Length: 323
Picture 1 (cartoon, one colour):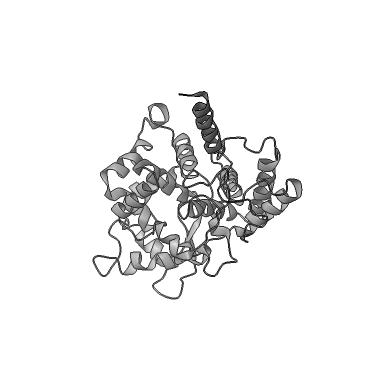
Picture 2 (cartoon, helix red, strand yellow):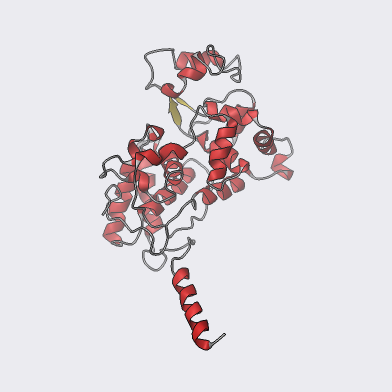
């Protein structure tokens, strides 16, 4: 190979490499207080509204499953923004992300992406509910597309376990990731709107309630979500520790106390059921896998779905506006 060809190939490699990858500490030189600023904003918001951590964790998930983790769910100045899709019904936390972005723009104009703020805010949300702190790889760029017609990739609470597994696998996530990321429902609430069919007109039986619901739990759910007139009422997805990040929800699911239908479906598949059992055995604290460590691996993995880096995308000045 001639020196000229070698140098040409090296140059092309360097150009391609300049697109970059996510890495921990991406802003250490360009905006070294970035993570600290996001922490402070999320902490302040969470102290004034205890529902904020669950809201921010859900926002991260919904952002990553449509267009990749690129902040596309935040945009509202297009004709049919992604955030208006039915799949994003009830999504909140946009104001917290905008507040963090405004403070970052004061300190480091045009440096920190909205997509990274969403990922960092999710980490802080987990920590605020006594979950594990973890290092967040950063360096995402903000996406340039936001279209509600693209939101079909979001897993739906009424889907079968095979449909849920397929949607996760299409994003490069495993059955284990499905269980662990579903366990994020350990914090937060859901609306009765999503419970009506499960409680009163369960498919495919065409009537009655989901037989997976424990008979001792069904009356409690029906009391909280009557058949009509209470669509906007909310109930905890983890009936024991609604505002504490822990693995208790997996025990609830196993024993028929799952609130969400999609969580209950984890019992319908041998693989996902085995993953749940691996965290609940009597010897798990000594010999078994760590739920917290494995959850961190899954959420970091999810946070790299379809990311834009380097020359892809841009850095928005306002998270809700395409520049």
